[in-house]
Image 1 (tube, rainbow, N blue to C red):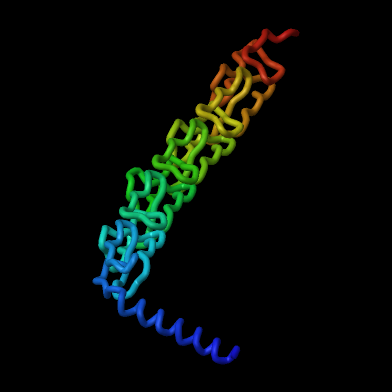
Image 2 (cartoon, rainbow, N blue to C red):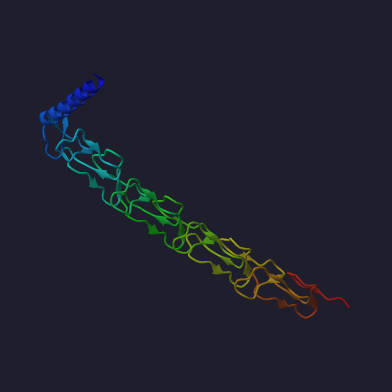
Length: 239
């Protein structure tokens, strides 16, 4: 009958299962039962042994040598993909802060990692900057400056200037001025002056005075001469 046939099949399955168990070997850790034979696990895989039917791949962030019971976490500064037999150092410009990292992380802008296997990134010193993923910091161009850890440099404001790699901008000297973002301050033209440091423009000389270029003040015209203002020289007076 159908019921007897069903019971017979169940009994047959149970007998086959018991036979399989008793015919299989109990393997040591690092081995798996394959075709009823204890087979060593290859590097990058692992097995707890006993009746394990396969060697499992190590997850990303770990590795194993051959015949391994477990996988080992990658050290900080190193990463691995799934099924790895070794860990790979993060390249310069990247880091892995923790053990067992599956991938390296780019240094953020304003930081850098000069060597491989970095566990953290360093702040760029003042006067330099870096984009994300940098292994070095770059000096600020002339006419700009930066504080520590800068992602980019800032233009010098009007009345100041800087040379390359500056951590701050310097005030323009008297007799000079700037409109900002300058490597050097411009001298005041003839007929003008700047009598304070950090000037953003020059002032025209008043009538009856004159000046040469880069003047910090205007001089009075000699007796018998005068000027209309904003003058580089004086002219004789007329009666």
